[in-house]
Length: 273
Image (tube, rainbow, N blue to C red; front, side, top):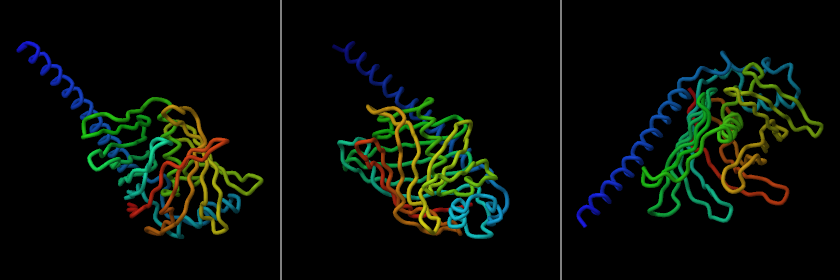
């Protein structure tokens, strides 16, 4: 009996040590991505002028002239504080979350806490940078709940990074390496690479140049894993440091039959630096 107890305790200690090592590796990765993202150089040097897009189609000019006020100095990064609701499974309900995100030309780091129940809060991070993309979330700090990395996670994260340049719009300027075109229906499309990952998307604009909808292809995990249509609907705009950016958005996965909303967020602050 005593020997069995010793063996059981040894197994428990080994499992606990494994969880601690895994969490330490996660914390180190997050610190590295946070540093890379926060210390990035601006995607374009100088200040904004409409002359930067004078050779682009009128729709593209309207997008940039709405998003960035004249003579705005180009930031090297932005930190977003947000809150909202998240639904990881289509058959489940929404859970409230709070999050902080750092976004720059190098990628992003989204650190969030999701309260699925009073005593069941999951916390962790999504990120993308030179090392690729990752998702890691934990229950009670050490118990892994979600973990993803590799090519599919990196494609999805790269698409997210470029899509979220709606909050960092000068990273979408032609001078930052973005190619723009206009569809016959008036929507505008962009193509940009980030750390070797090609990303394209389509924007539907309001007459003012504000984005009403972003559509792009992203890999999705879970039972429906694979490349899916990802849609972000912008419901409200706000101004921070001479950038006019979305402050309320709704994200969804689309298929020919359904629209599956899974993410609703309100931006509380945007700190450009």
